[in-house]
Each structure stands twice: as C-alpha cells, then as structure tokens.
Amino acid sequence: MAVSMEVERRVRDYLRRDESGLRRELLLILLDGKKHTSEEVCEILRNRGFGVTRKKVSAMLGVVSSKLGIVKTELGERKRYYIKPEYAELVENAIKASLQSL
Image (cartoon, rainbow, N blue to C red; front, side, top):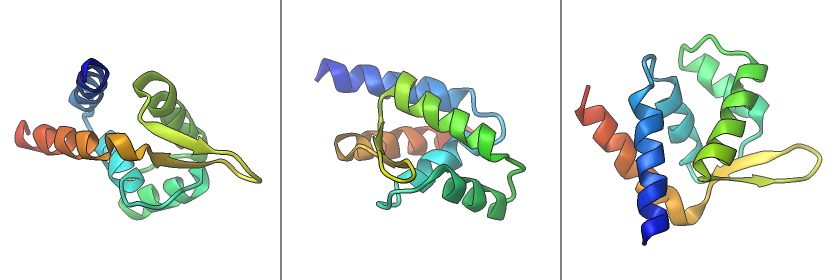
C-alpha cells in the first residue's frame, strides 16, 4: 500500500512539471495495452503534433522506467515498453487529476 502511494506521488509530481502535455501523452500511449518500441512512441508523438526526437523519447522512457518505476521493459531484438499492469489504474488516476488542475 505504501509503495503504491509513493509511486502515485512520483507520477503526480512528474505530470505537474508537464508544461507541454508531452509527458501526459507519453503515459497515455503506454497505457493503451500494447508494448511499444521507442521508435513507435516517437512516431505516435510526432503524429500528435509533438516535435520530438527518438533520443528524447528514449530519455523520457528511461526516466519513467527508472525514476517512477511504472514502466516495464521487455528485452529482445528491440526494447519494448509498457506500463506495469499493477500501476495502470494509478497512472490513469494521476492523468485525470492532472487534467483537472489545468
């Protein structure tokens, strides 16, 4: 219980510093139930109007994975990222809360 509260606090803090909406969009992509490569995430973000590079997306995925601890990395020919199932609802709630504070 205490671990999930700490994770939720970190996610809310991460989203609080989201001036452009890019962080929120990244989390929304990862919440779609699919496993994405950094290239796929980059393309989706570009299609949604964000001027990002693959390097920037890879850095963001690294932060979300290591600092927030909510993303799982599946190794293989290419790394694939997705929200850990046990944190999906928590992340959805944090996103909703961030939208209400706009």
